[in-house]
Length: 427
Length: 78
Image 1 (tube, rainbow over the protein chains, first blue to last red):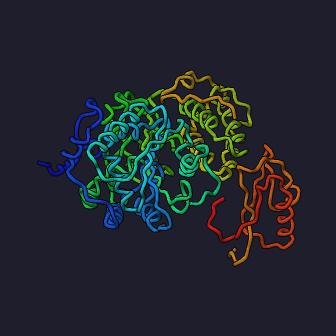
Image 2: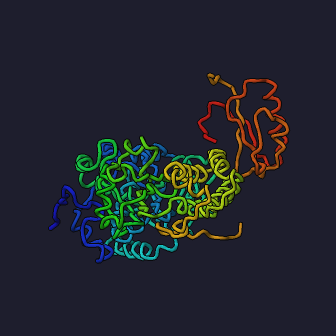
Image 3: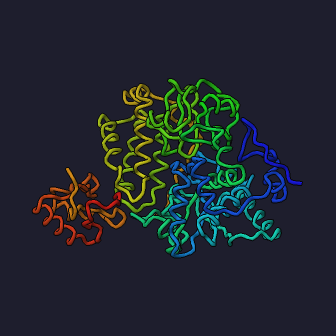
């Protein structure tokens, strides 16, 4: 007998079911826990719209609008891409979800395919995510053995690059080219992979859609905020006792997220919210900050892909930012001059500032270059890096002044966040 | 300033552009170069006939075919 879903008021939704230590939930357990699902269709587009679900890949774009855009294209059979490339170094939520609940993600993709008229699904995964790759391979074998009637599902591997998950890079990679962004690409919903209408959707978003299809939009809206309903996965790193992936209500406070991660190891000196394209938040009001779109937009921030990097007491935000900008400079796809050269120049100047070895004009140049490179790449890579950098200069203005005055800062050499490894490679 | 029908604006493909810089010589009214030699393009509609002539010449002169004229009311963001 199939048990009805038992949503709890505060418990996890995506990560409900067996504990993380038990690993991947098999198809049988998944079906028994969640019950049967109806085939997707226009009813699901309506349900998604009522649910207010927004994309969890970072842009928080309304999911129903994205699906409708693809459904409206009836020229060719469409294609659905499960985007689990997760190039953001501080994020682990998509690979965690795919490793633990592959069938929930796959259900969401099948529902999307049925709703937008797609006959093929591609799981777009980063090559180094071995656990996620194994989970998907086993899950696909289980689904074949169970004889599920669903579109062809194949796996495409991509190198773990920062820009590889950008939707035009996904389309170009799956069309046989490099995983690099394109200049003013036709929108994937119109002409995506191989010219077909393509839905590129983040893995977590698809899992939410699979639950909305089973439980309804009212159930989804019973958590989160009216403008950003539901729960969301967050990757917490840095100065907390238990770094990891946690499912929280959208609109919860930073303090609650820190509690879930075992508490802060010391009063935070700040936090990086939203990932490398995100914003630094200073210590004032950090703990009471609510993680909903409106409150964050007022501070020029965003939840992005759900990253919270906690800078512990005594950590140096300038040093962290110098390392991150160096990484982003190395991760430029190498296509656009202002991105390649501008980020390299910014990284060099930030490194001098972090070492308290800046020349007097460095700060002015950093500020000018950050403005100068915005909007001048084919994708938003330079804009995201500039946004991050400017938020660090503003948030840590007092500490920055010490660096500029030449006061040595040993903390700047000690990474508090998991340190990115800039790659040197031929270009 | 209202965008009227038929107005054109400059559009740069940053992937094709190699920063050769001819465009900034030919239409300095609309294009300057950054310190790495890459063009900073004024994307507003071109209303001055002389500037438009210069812009056409710059488009024709770009060896990388990175520069073009686009409808000013098109939704493309670059």
